[in-house]
Image 1 (tube, rainbow, N blue to C red):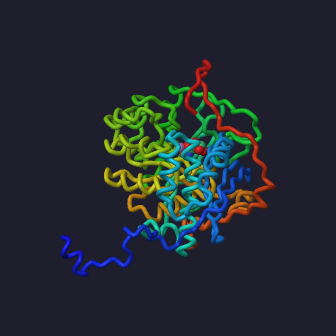
Image 2: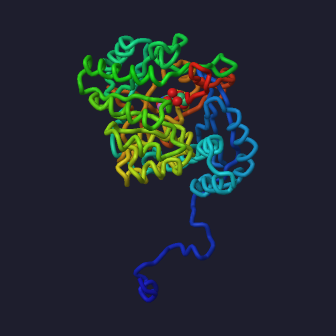
Image 3: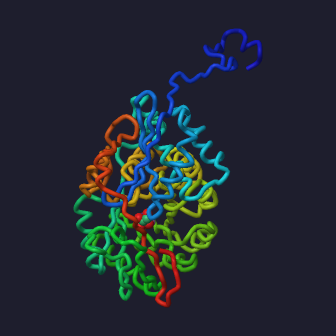
Length: 432
Ligand code: EZ4
Ligand code: CO
């Protein structure tokens, strides 16, 4: 429009922002930031941002096995900078913590930023009296498809577990199984019937053995037997946990093609993103990666070259809701769908953040789901998620819809704990 038009009154602006007056009506000062490290079943780092209007927000900043470093980062390096700032300035605060630190990226920094970012979105939703998905743009769907985990000591054991999950209504299932001749890999360990991670009550990282040859010989049989037993309808996933090289992953992807996987997860480490190009050239098995990514930069080449099909970043580990939205939009341009990490070392605050993002993103694919069965966890976190017929439902509550019981959390003291490490049979350290 030209100047005369502007002056004609056709386009008149009530507030001329050139007068230096803030156009923001709801300035809201951050008065305190509290950081809680508790262990209701497993360790969580929880951020609570308080404001001068009495409204508070909650965020998840948990990095499994490195919890205290994030807590110290938040307490010593972030909290003093944010007291007095406007809680509504989510974008500016995110950039301040990312660009302003000079030291960019990395799991500790990005989890600390994520804790703050989620809490600020929670506050904004509460002020607007709207669920966060409404602030993102509203709902693309009314229920969120999930994949559950079936693990077992033998093929039969794993498939029995899967049969039970199918009966419960799950539409997609991840199959992991102990590999014959390899003690403690992907089995059901320490009495945990539904999870294979060794954790808690161990002062030092446990070790597990690995053998790629045994693994590659075994996994196609697991999926062949699964298809024989369940037919082609149920969707199947497998997590390689980054233990292969690209050519080995390509070989596995080809071998699994007849069993029509929804995706093969973390088939190789992704520091060298071009590893996925090699896999892609050899197989039509869809590929998923991203649970340990910290920023959009970790996924840039994977997405823009269309080397992957699902991006699995988690809000807690990639800097919060702000960058998750950006990554989802970027991925949509290249036909890549989202499949957020859903491990139990993400707190219910992160799972709720995912539910809001999953409700909104048109290019949402599937959400990993372990569940919130543990009593202690449900005593400390009240969340808006429920499960029905293989889908997660998100109850309409302002903000993220999670509450955190500080007193209950105090009962469950932090316990130093680690994820396992993996070694080859000759002692060589491998990827867990
Ligand atoms: O690596 O819980 O997809 N889920 C997984 C899990 C995670 C651990 C650490 O977050 O791969 O085993
Ligand atoms: Co995984």
